[in-house]
Length: 238
Image (cartoon, rainbow, N blue to C red):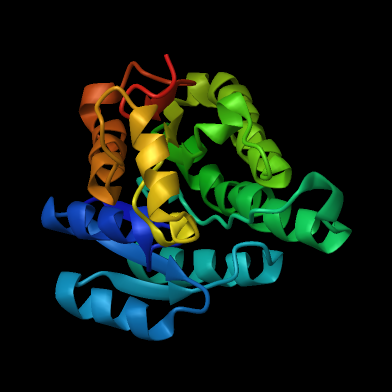
């Protein structure tokens, strides 16, 4: 049985990944921070093992690694999904806003990957899948800090893929477009209709649309794919 760690697994894309990986026979570690009840509910339905951890806190990440490694062994697949977003005019973004977004979206990815990658290197195998965004490619108005953090995810992915290639580890990235998650709950019906008009497939994406691609990247079918950014946006960006 393969072990997969999914950060931010209590909602949205992460939650759908937990369900899908569990369905396919993986032992799933569901990382969450504040959503205790939701994590427990998902765990009951899927058999996933909930692990509370603030991914932006190095000590908490170390404890998460120790718990998983000492009790269940190595992680075969790491899905760096934990992320936060915020809509604000650039002139209204505070230093705290900027740090909060980067601490979760970039620092969290760095800390979790660093904690688990040594075992992958020693075993010369492993899959790392990072979650960026279409806005990390194009930039998003009123989301400069979020866009910048997601662009950093892409740079991280490409650089790490080059560094870990000879160790047999693949590092890839998905860039979702407009997906029906809590992150987009602030959009009005008019906003959604306008966005649909920009998407060739004519609809908003679902968390499952993204989770299916993440599952594919975790499989042996992608052993010769690394350093790639796969857009899951209905053709919004071509």
